[in-house]
Length: 266
Image (cartoon, rainbow, N blue to C red; front, side, top):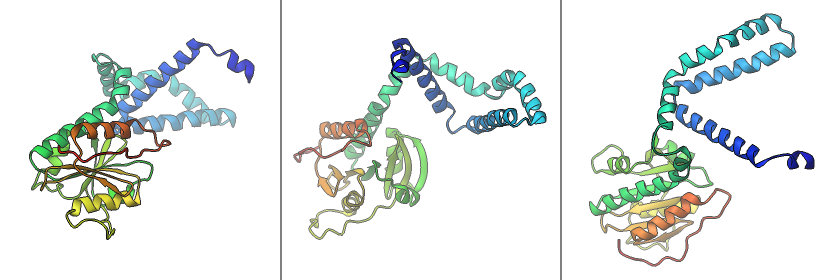
């Protein structure tokens, strides 16, 4: 084992890292397309090829062996749209590595941008961020969206009169998983009567899970944060950015906690 580790060069680590990044981005590009189903079928054929070779299934082995001779041409034909899209992404000014490290920053920027506009127009909203404890039950209570987080989409969802403006949106793995989700109301008798349904629902969910919830009040135009059964009211934009950045950069194995916050006007 020591000799094996000692024989690994820095260039080997760089080589493996580059291949891993390429494979990751290829998967991101084809995820959710028909191509991913084709890849599953191709993977099954590869397994079948090795099994037929080991078990001496000569007919199947001969068919699959000859299939690979035209496999490269078939691959190019089947994956032509995905290959074109991948090359297009490579040609963009934003490098893959840069995009990889900026996804969390873009998530925070989009949410803060939406919050700023919603506050300015006095539109109420509930935005939930999933952490370690899954929110599958609450996601299923709403309308599934599974879309990239954008300020425009968030504002469209919560705009008064739209079918999805009631309830909460749940963000899971950098995507809006669902909208119009119903959250459990807190039964804490010590809560002030000033708090409305949105705040009680946010506190209720934070009491049962480790989710981070943003509440935008249409009555006061203030931003609040709920987590761990605690509610911090009147959060300013700088603090919101700080807390969301901490949320986005904290891994699931790490502990995410409120720091000492003071109430301040947006």
